[in-house]
Image (cartoon, rainbow, N blue to C red; front, side, top):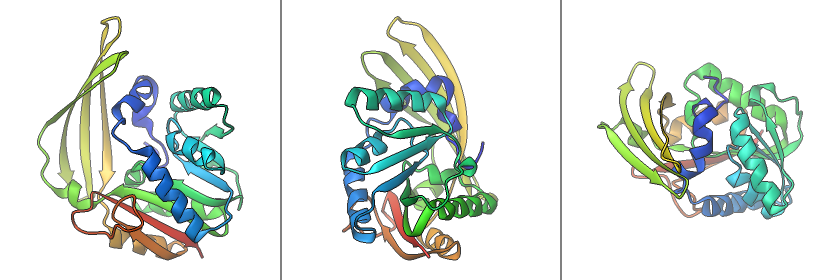
Length: 257
């Protein structure tokens, strides 16, 4: 899997992405992000949503008045995003592309990568490529915002786990198990989905992913060494939340040096 893609949700699983992420508070996350942008880059207008998925953050940022470009490697996810903005009569430039293939040069005041996609950067070479490309697309003094699961939540022992997601169109049972790869500093997660659609048809899908284990100090160091300064870290989607061991999510914002 490319460091800049969300290939787990390409194809058949893409249509169920929103159902399985109903727990996300996109409004709160976007309002928090808006506050960061207004503080670090007042007057910013052009924003790049990296790995935008089905467009939930992009839609809210567009509704807040920003000109948003969203990129994702999954054509299926973008198809869902385009249907959403058509219904809402919004204009967002959604493009099927990986970050590494973009030809923008210093066009955006802000770039953000939310939804824990940063965890897919499992090697230092992929991290270097990510930060280099973000710097290329940002204007001077532009701002990068990213989030990731606090590493402490990923190093804990995880047993097998089952989740059930249900709406009027489908019932999804997701079984997962994982193990810690200490050498690579990743948690390898295996998923098995049993999907029953509204007609009663049952489909099974298998998927797997590697999640890099990151801590706030390491990501801060990495961003600093790849040309970002004025770094600010938050223990969640609130400007008043410091990072602690118990923070489930870490958000870091930095300015292009």
